[in-house]
Image 1 (cartoon, one colour):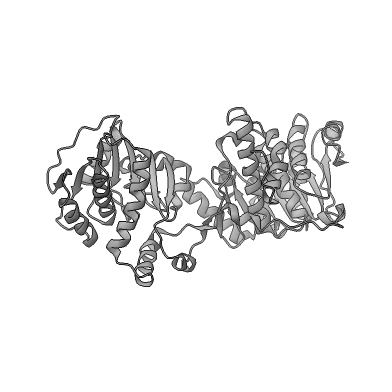
Image 2 (spheres, helix red, strand yellow; image 1 turned 45 degrees about the horizontal axis):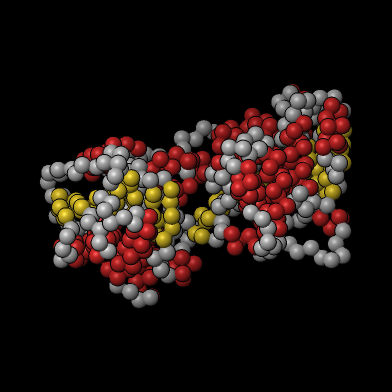
Length: 511
């Protein structure tokens, strides 16, 4: 896993590295600058590319000045603007200013009062080193004006560590107009929490991590509730299958899904469940969907509801290891009553999705009646119905974590970096998936995967992390074959076997 440390703790990581490596702070800055320069010069290999470097008075500015010097030594001719309105540079920024002044061929301007801005064209690349992750209040005055000037230009922008003006976590009270719009953000060692929120994409652009050699021990000791799942994390989570295993070893699952006109949701969830290793699957369906489901998914059994057209009666779950409730159920009054009765009467862990989530949103008192180990899988609007309207992704994530802790459930908050939130409030962001998965039925596939893993006896934390990861991996494989635009939810189901083979260690999977 890759920890996502609060920006307030970044200085502690630096300090630990400086003390225990040991290394001087100016040498650690030089190491970061070398990594930054390597990426920048590889991406823009033409020495005639016009670069303009904007450096602030702190250590982020020191990084930028060091990058300008290293680029000059490689034959580039950057124009450098150091903003020092208070005449007070950080020690390492001052050192890198002095080093830069000793290099010939640098256009250097130290701005203490008036700023005569350079012309920025579409050919220019701006290196943003105004402010780093230590910023804790919105930019104002002259710095805000510089940010607006850069944003108004057609130039490409590369931000060092974090776009200037953006906070590392909560931007609720930030001033959006005073944040750099980067095309590329080169984050040092670890990602920032704010990179993973949809509303910050215009500021962060694409982001890339650069290893600058911060102490692994310091990172291991760092206290944080957030982490980004990495590929290698998943490899040891998959349970091996014994040679003498039989279907009874892999659980019985009950899927309550579908209504008239929405049989597809139950089919997608059922196929995904079966493609994720469950031993036996029963689908509870209204009579109108029975033939459809049995024809489309012959491997599953069906259990008929009394209603011809919808879910109208709670099902006995005693013989099942896991239950999924919600895909395609609709919102008829009898369905709403049956959903609440199902939650009230079940002791078996449940995956709650789609219409069942929306019904819960109108009857929040039932959240406390969910069986232990249950999983909620809302998208942002569905979560808002459960916890109240949220102003942004940070507040939504915070409320989701509070809900998970209060009710004792697990939450998969779906999105570009789907967040798996455990019952103790810890949050794992998923690293697989792509925008092609933003299509009807994709969530039904995830429900089926999670149902299968719960039924097989996976610990709920592992089931949620593994299920979300494999869902995204299937999406990535589907994207390679079908394209983002051409993908449909059924493609995810088709790619699940290949995704599971990758986790099982097969290296010959066509990708």
